[in-house]
Length: 389
Figure (cartoon, rainbow, N blue to C red):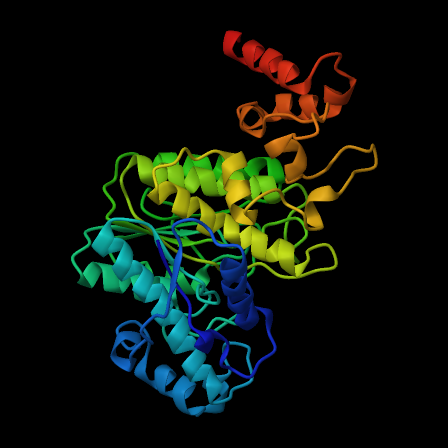
């Protein structure tokens, strides 16, 4: 699987996380390779490609710095390196689209900072909208219908405005924040949800994907934000490493079942006192690992997805937190759920856990340590009750 990255992604002189994160992830893929993933330098975005979807006066402002208020509408201060950086990152998004369409396999780019940008300005540290650019490239290449799936924490208002009149594009947006909120006429073609409770997050994504029924898509362009995570600024308590691993499983399993290639970009995810650089990189590696597993026709299971993200058990900070009752509060505790080398009596099968209803998941987490037998036996007992009812 080709994943596009160029050092030019970080060419702008801004010490902002979105311009550094791609480099961290690329470094991690060299140190801890994911099977089947090849890092490739993209072709930089050309002016004519940008002007297919962005106003020429805005494109010129980003390139030259004038008029200044337009050049800095993305929220950055302007410098000459900005043009190089955004042409590289948006070129990566475009290259992933072209590669996915050509091979009918998943491809991706380590790009982020895309979905708030609109036709004539930037916003929210987004300069050009690589999602809309990619959709335009796909349609021009002969795609009949493209799904833009935006699972960043924030609403994708720029994308919504740009593609709302493109009949070949469906825009599905599930957010956990009202930033960049936009008016949306509810229809079967494009939807927006703001989810404010962790137990509604995965069910909402599942419901929206199922509601597409058997609409034929030639491509999914996936804005795979990791900022819904509970430790990322603006995330929701209860959306954990394992929740996001299960989200990636849902997305790529849905696409693979329908034989639709996915072109992904990485979107939001930010450091905090509770989210280290290694943890943040690991969250984004969930997307890359799941895409690679899907390409290789491996079973898509939450445990194997988490293992692919870390090339083994997760050893960073996020996976070892405890709540006030002494329970592990994040199912990303890989030493328990993946290997169980020490025959840990509290270990359990995460894939079985994900089959439980929300009510039974809560009961399991509250009662598993008091259960007389092994937790997997308790899981089977709860699942058996579900199947009878």
